[in-house]
Image (cartoon, rainbow, N blue to C red; front, top):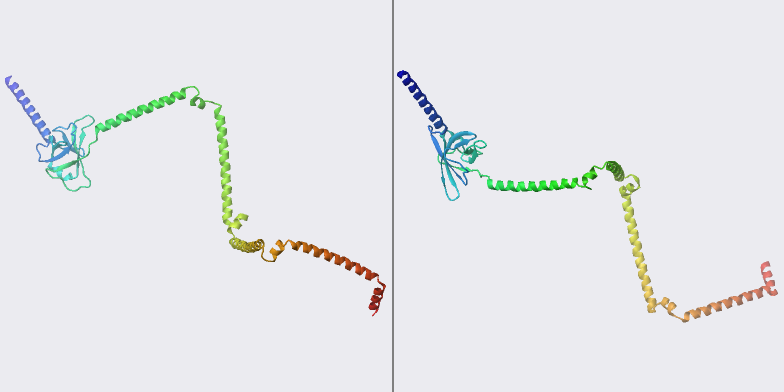
Length: 316
């Protein structure tokens, strides 16, 4: 009986010891305790709850753990972590270190992101660059401001809907059944006007095309090259007439100036006051002479001697 109890106890101890060894092996393998490791460094402004022992991942694969966290200066915190040396040849010196979360609400972890392009393999003791961390406080402030804006917009929408629901509102206008025929008629009129405008535009386009082709009177005028020479000759003639009129106007101006100054025959004729009287006397004398001559001719025609003389001359 005692022998059986001892056997059971020994078996239990052996099983417990095996489980302990297996657990230690698994933990050591996960923490890279039994493999050669390389030590790397990264400097963060905020470690956001990262602790020694948290995992280090590269492209989702756990290749090491956080060894130590200590202050580096007044603004940075130094994170010392180790990775398996076999992975050094795959990690570029320009890789980036950042903080992440294992799942939605899991533990914090250190993530190593591949560097592009690949420069050289990282070495033991190198310091990785750190990806800038998002400012959670700024994001929360922005989110709070966005929520306030959404609240103001929802209040405005509620005010608008209340106005629509009130009497004499736009909603009543839209729900008026008599408005539909009027709107339909207005749309028909707009369609008819648009069709007329399209026809007018087409007609104008045809007219412009005909003018370009030289069709019609207007097109012939615009496209006939001889019209330009005719118009040019007309302009030249008008300019010549204008020059002639200018010369005549100048001569007339000279004559009028002489007449005003009293020089020349025209001035004498216009300014001599006795000339008119003399002309009148001469005209009267001419009239009297004509009358006496006419009377003399009548007397001669009645004279018998003159008649005989004329007969003799006609016979000869």
